[in-house]
Amino acid sequence: MGLLENISGSIIKAIKSKNNYELESLRAIKSALLLARTQKNFGGEISQADEIKILQKLVKQRKESAEIYSNQDRLELAELELNQAKVIEKFLPKQLDHDEIEKIISEIIDQSGAQGMKDMGKVMGLASSQLSGKADGKTISNIVRSKLS
Image (tube, rainbow, N blue to C red; front, top):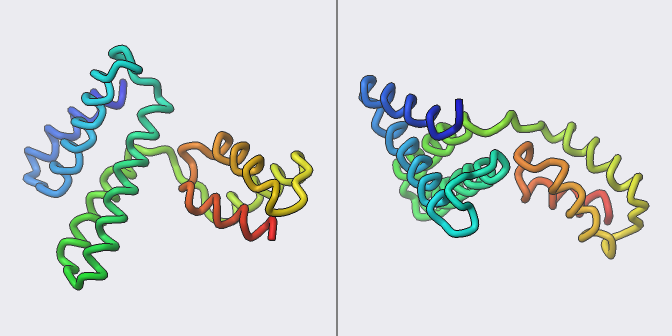
């Protein structure tokens, strides 16, 4: 079953259970996927990698919005955004924990022969492709920066 069909089924469940924040999150996912399908570069079909990128973008948007709301002391809106991010994350592959990411990045650094910060771009490229969908880009960047410093 594809992601879009899975989302549609979840929308029906959310409507029946009257879970509004979940319903809103699911509709946002469906809208983003349908919008991506209509764009020229996808030609009506979306690869699984592109679906993951779209979902990661939606989660990132929700988390950034929550941070802004928290800074403005609008905690009820921040909580809503974080709840929506959790709903969207359910459809992403299992995320690796910090230790697992560090181990993989250490292996990449050893294999690539990176020496310092001048090689950060090379390591980031390899790490991003290998950890795509399994780790947040900001986390990857912070770990690579700390390892190369």
